[in-house]
Length: 278
Image (cartoon, rainbow, N blue to C red; front, side):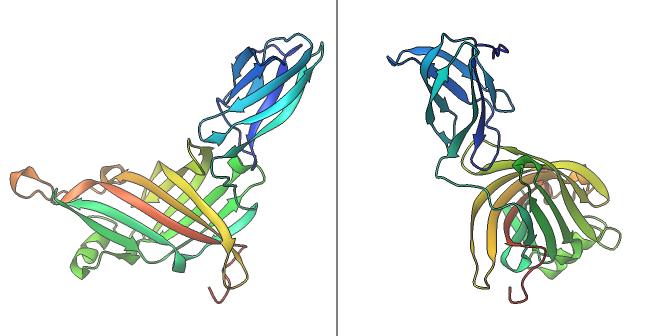
């Protein structure tokens, strides 16, 4: 990308809700429709082109996962600053209003899936958890904090649940809480998708964990409030969190798989706390 500013076009490519669109392509054509130049935005969504002859041009901005946008630029000897060029996500999905949102456990789910004997999957869920999402005016500054009660694991089998709570796995008497705190958010390719970067504290170990997050929308609830919905997934390695239990059955197959898939279905209510009727 050129760093020349004088005589060229300058612009910032953003979504309607304020995200930068990295690597968006800006194409400039003259009034006959012939392409004059093409530049790619930086990681911050900033575009600066080489100098252009004074005149009127058509500017077209495109990016994967977004609808293209076109505008007219009147270029003088000193160039033209187009300000913020807004791209709409495919499907027209926008972020929810800024402010605090409280996770509603009654209408959310935190699930974990592990392989058993190399043949099938064992599904479990944590029954007690809570947290808070803060949607910032500047969306990349948004954040999330969540706390899970480790002893609330439920796989539908009392003996198995007891083993999972034992020192072989979660060791809930010593480490009763599982916590997640975000450290940053970046947009991903595709409609309403993001990567949440954060730190997961599990079994006395803190590791950096990224969540693949999809925003499913915003809408009113029956109690007069507003709700947002997200779906998130990630994969954890047990050994990264010092859970090294690995009973081996015949043919060298481990009783429990070494990786754990985590699936989140989250509803959150606008405000600092849940309504009494929720």
